Amino acid sequence: MSSTPQTDTSRLEAYWREHWRLILTLLVIWFAVTYLHPPFAASLNNIKILTGFPLGYWLSSQFSITVYVILIFIYALTMNNVIDKKYGFEEEE
Image: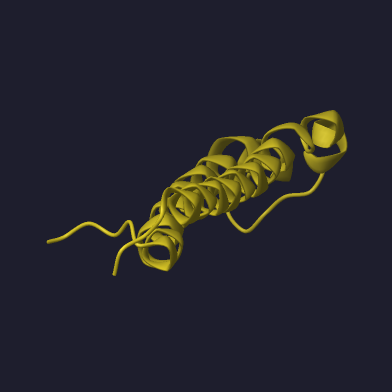
């Protein structure tokens, strides 16, 4: 199957548009997890979770880091299993 430079260009543009959409979505989640709870930390610290830690502390120390790791996995899996395959950029094993 031969492809013309026009179809290659449009395929690359579509690939990068979808790639940037994924990155921006994950950055919005990152921003929300990082910056939305600190203004409410004082009131959140009045709530204790199962282990007795204040909720504000737990959101900063455990929840945020867990979400960051999950975002990394979501990015890698989405790129490898969805976007790369959709546009023909999957790696040979």
